[in-house]
Image (cartoon, rainbow, N blue to C red; front, side, top):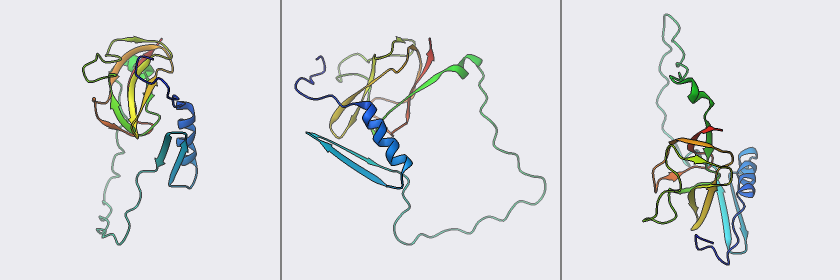
Length: 161
C-alpha cells in the first residue's frame, strides 16, 4: 500500500458513520469503541456548561412592523444549485496530501471518480482516507490543510457527472 498501512487493518468508514449516527439519534452524549489497536471516541458537541451560568435579560420585543425574516441564500449561478457536498464522516484534522511535501490528492477543477481518495482526516492518530462517493468535478474545497473538521462537516463541493 502506498500510504504505509501494511499490516494494519483499514477503518471501515461506513461503520464509523453508523456509530456517529447512533450517537446523533440517541440520548447518549459520548461513545467509545475499541477494536484491536483502534479506538474510536465520538462525543456530541455543544454541551451545556457545568455550574451556574449568568444570563442577560431578553431584549424587549420590537414594537411596530414585523421584522423581516432572514433572507434565503440566493444562488447567483443556477449550476451551483446542483453541486453535491462531500462531508467528513468523523471528527479530526484535514490533510490535503499523503505527506507534507506531496502533491494534494485533488485540486479545484479535478475530475474525480467514485472511490478515489480525496483527502485524509486524522482521528486519534489514525489516518483515514476519505473517498469520493460519486463522480464529478471538484468546484470548491472548504477547508484548509491542517484545519480541524467536525463529523459531517462539508469538505468539498462537487459538480456531479
